[in-house]
Image (cartoon, rainbow, N blue to C red; front, top):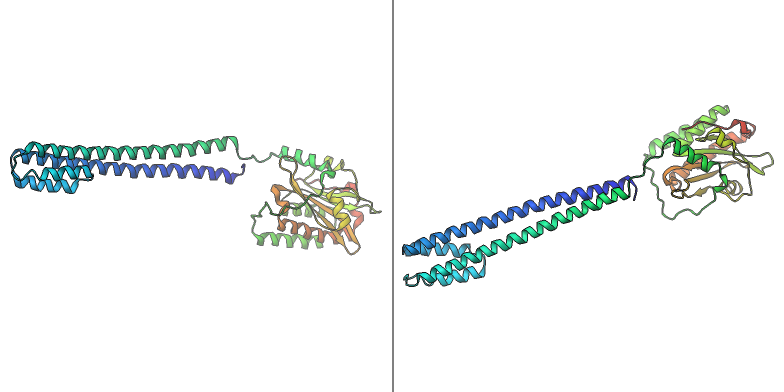
Length: 348
């Protein structure tokens, strides 16, 4: 309801309704004008018949009566004209002729009035419909305004709220129908991923790795990303590197027990990627991928994903690719990433 696309659909519906009403009214007015013109033409011929009858011009009366009968649009008018025509042969009943011609004129006038009234009612209906659509659109825009983008302060506050509660990352079932579609072309994304993997293979210090973690976060459209490493006894997980979280926020993270009931610990224990679905108005979704090496799971990456992207297969695949490439780095230099002091603080 609150998406920008829905707002555009409402506005488009209002425009189409208004344009349709305008076109219909123009056509209706043209039809009314045609009906009135025909009625005026009929009246003109009636005057010719009346003049010809008054002057006893039988030839003029015959021609005018033929013209009237061809112009008549109602059965009542045609019947009256037939009766009038039968009395014009000898001009002995002029009054009857004139009366019947007048009956035909009134019938045609009544028909024209009825047609105009019918068209006016249809015009009013069209205008009412367009107005109703316009009011509905206004109500929709008023009661369901587009959701404003969060300010940097709000984003930071939300990140701090979620990040300070790692146990909230509880595994939930994946939806059957994905609600997120990646709009970026696949080519540039794959190229960026390949460059990231190449740079990860050549990383030589923690500062470089911190920058690569930021690139991975942007590539997955994550608002925050944490690299968790295993303690020496493999009993706990510690945040070693991050992107998108302030240092003071990350400093409050307690060590996670590998037996904890949350997505990070579950990914570490099972070696399987975990998906945390977003809860609208409460928390964003997340993707948690295990960092697997030849000696087992050496860490976990957890990424908070914007806009429901946690259900996108392409975003999930990027998380797996990054975790797989990171495995070689953590496995070869574990001591560089187990220290809490090496925590990254870059903010996107």
